[in-house]
Amino acid sequence: MQFVHINGVLIHYRLQRADEQRPVLVFVNSLGTDSRIWHHELPKLTDHYTVLTYDKRGHGLSDLANPPYSIADHVADLAGLLDHLGLSQVIVCGLSVGGLIGQGLYAKRPDLVKALILSNTAHKIGNAETWNNRIAAVEQNGIGSILDAIMERWFTEPFRKPENPAYRAYCNMLVRQPATGYSGTCAAIRDADFTEDAKKIAIPVLCIAGQQDGSTPPELVKSLADLIPGARYEILEDAAHIPCVEAPAAHAALIRGFIDQLD
Image (tube, rainbow, N blue to C red; front, side, top):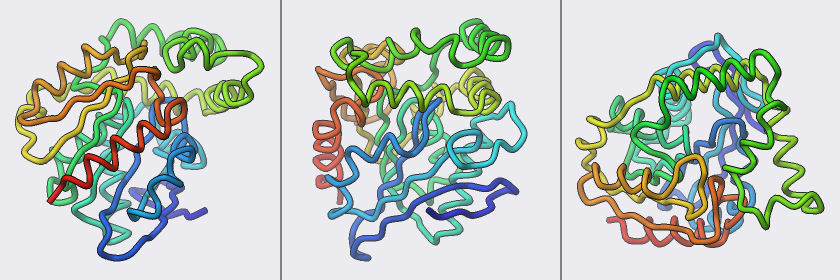
């Protein structure tokens, strides 16, 4: 495990270096998860790329800092981490809020980003009323009070079996995230809108949707792809909101195919 202070916030990260000539792939995880969600597909990628994973503020082993957050806070953390590690021209793979962070990083620091993989995300996710209701529920009754509703969006029905140990583990991951870090990032998502910024993206972009995603449905991901000039759009049929857990081989194959076609 590796740790560094960025913008006064302790950030937990893991950098797995490949040959210096290999592309650098940076993963940014979703709301209510930590960097362990990528571990299922990392073995399919670390032989080919240098890979950076990290816990965004308010999640995993990183600091809470001062919630509520903005996407700009998360973007500044990622930019600072990349600068600290001397990394630029990276390929950012952001899932859900991670995709918003990826879009924000390109808008703020295009020098850092060579390409974007925007998985199960959009230019704007939800509306103020939805996010305010979720924040209120978590603040009043804890993350456990929304567990079942969130899991229905995250995973397909076959995955959500009580006897599936992986499913139970990801339930644990969600409810064990700090409630203030979770609600603080809900506020960041609520206030983020990259509709106009998406139209200005001038690097290669892959947008990935899960056919059964209840959080960012395929039509929402497609609306993002339609805004971005030249973006590629793919659907994973047997996945919901967290395909790197539920369909890691298929998700990793899309990532590798996209990167292999970059100049």
